[in-house]
Image 1 (tube, rainbow, N blue to C red):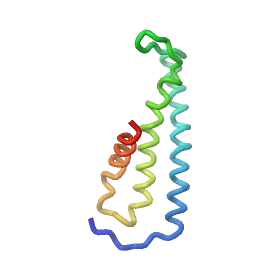
Image 2 (image 1 turned 30 degrees about the horizontal axis):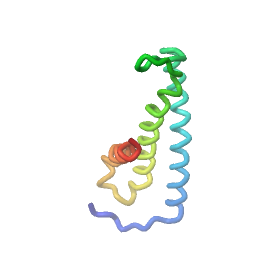
Image 3 (image 1 turned 90 degrees about the horizontal axis):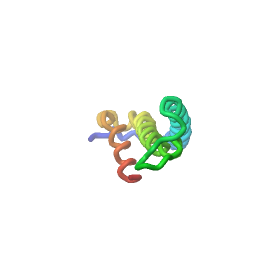
Length: 104
């Protein structure tokens, strides 16, 4: 790993905050769209271990977390690419796995 020794400007940090916030909101919006499609296909209720549960409530975190993790990794890779061009190939996957490991 040989960084370009390029120092980030204040725009880098502003971009980090803005894109991290955007990842949260895009993941929420995407989750609601995906859950709407799932409830249209499966129905409003899902049976798990003999209990009838509301589909959106049960599946929310199963959809939101992976989507949020992938978006965070994508946005971080986008920002870090000028500083570490050779290691960005696996950044998205590693970030997603790191988030999932911490959360789960």
